[in-house]
Length: 86
Image (cartoon, rainbow, N blue to C red; front, side, top):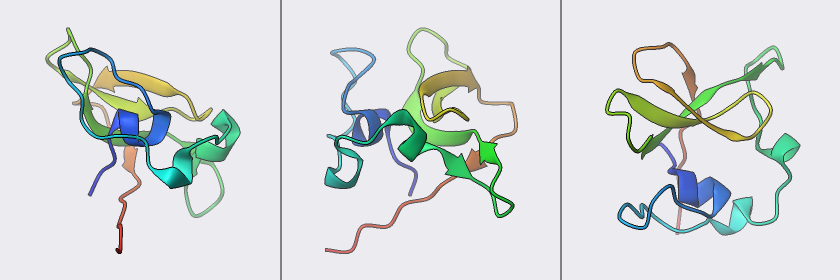
C-alpha cells in the first residue's frame, strides 16, 4: 500500500482529513533519510496516498530532498509501497 503524509511526516494538512498516525520507523528521521531512490541511486519523487487539500487534481508526495510536496496527479512520479507485518 502507499503511505500517507502523517504516516511519514507525523502531521496533517487539515484537521478534517487525518489519514493515519506516524509510523515508528519514520519518527525522528531527517529529510535526507526519507529520500526515495531508484535502482541507480538517484533521488526520485514518490507518491503518497494523501490528497493535497484545496487542489482536487493533486496529491501529496515525498520530494527528491525528502520533504513533503504536492503535485498534479496526472504527472509521472514513482511509488514506494509499504508492507507492515505484525
